[in-house]
Length: 206
Image (cartoon, rainbow, N blue to C red; front, side, top):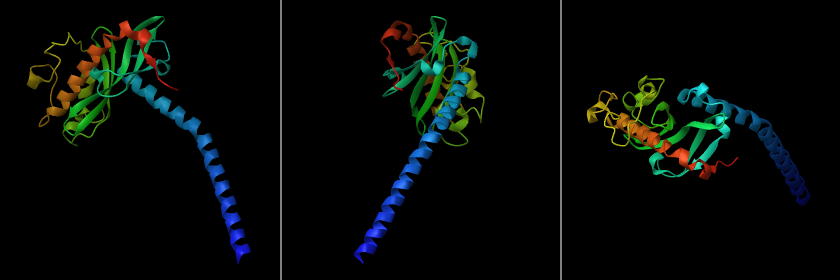
């Protein structure tokens, strides 16, 4: 009986070791492909918020981690666009903390003088049929940020129409677009401060 148990135990141990090895091998073989697909998706998203002729560096490799209240709580990634030796703008991860159903995650592209180049929502929990119109697949509302200029912190026009600004709100939903407009404005104003601190920014970890 003892020998039988030992035999079965050894068989199970060998099986577990082989299975672990196969899992590690599959993970190693697929990791490169997964990383490549993630990089392609990120590049495609970047192309939606900053024109490709606006920079000639590898934007994904020009990544920095910042803690800036204007972008939201915690760490946010900022990608600096350059053309030749000149920094021309930034793509920033930003958070609108005051969406109707919680925080809204954004990607905002701007130059350093207050012009928004593009904006996309990357994550949200807004109400279907109302607040979810911030998604480009459901509405062109988010596209209206491109080319808009933020004329300083007191720019009353950079707001939803209900607050006296130029951006439409949604029928039956003002909180969501207001949160996005305000977050984009804060991100654009923060971008104006970036040129003076480029040498102090902390690079993203590999």
